[in-house]
Length: 123
Image (tube, rainbow, N blue to C red; front, side, top):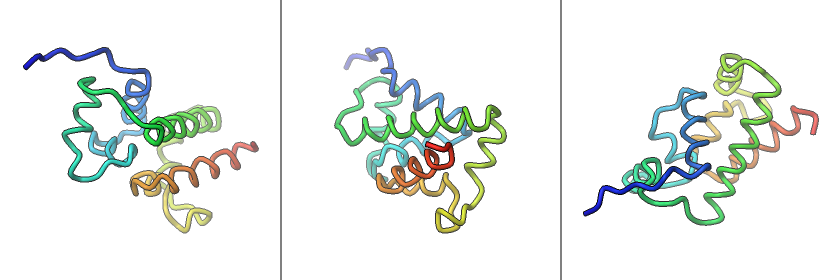
């Protein structure tokens, strides 16, 4: 079998950078993308560039994460403050932290967080 890997797509490069910035373990990529526990290998293949990110749902998830990250970086301008914010429970999120919502793997929770961040950014 060939060990060829394609260059990482911009979406995957962004995801890897996001995980580094937010200090997330690699397995959280699976949750952020909404893959199940039984799909760890598939997510590994994605992160290594062996398979492409496919499907409008996954692409929309990455687009929402990009939007959240862009807004947070302009709100905080400091990655440590951003990381604290991500980990603090919020009354508006049912006393869950933004990260808890993201780690639930639910697309609905991801969109809820996106709207919450947009609202807090005055948009």
